[in-house]
Length: 118
Image 1 (cartoon, helix red, strand yellow):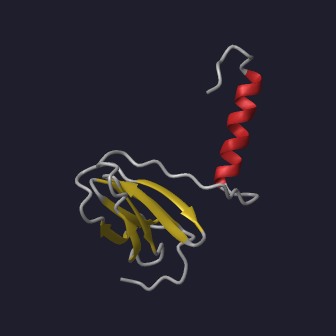
Image 2 (image 1 turned 135 degrees about the vertical axis):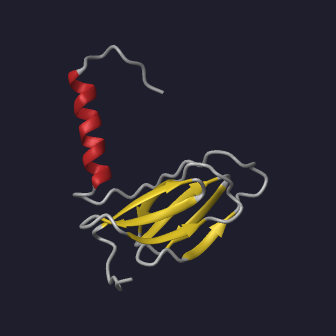
């Protein structure tokens, strides 16, 4: 397995309590990490501060995006074992999240004022 110094060209996917990094240049699996005590749920992911943040099965994990190593985990005591949503307030300019947010607001503006807001 080649050594990577950056995860910039990785595609991250999560399912069945696992996170997988795929090299976008050739589709090969770079690493696969099993998230303990999470069952077979879909994994929600977010990249923030050089960490791959993952939520599944009522738990939150921070992974090293280069090698998949678990840096920390939080079992969210007392909250059960369900789908976990992730969100931060940081929106660096030029990020995919910022672009997606702009696209969503543009679509909302062009679709008219018929929707409701929560």
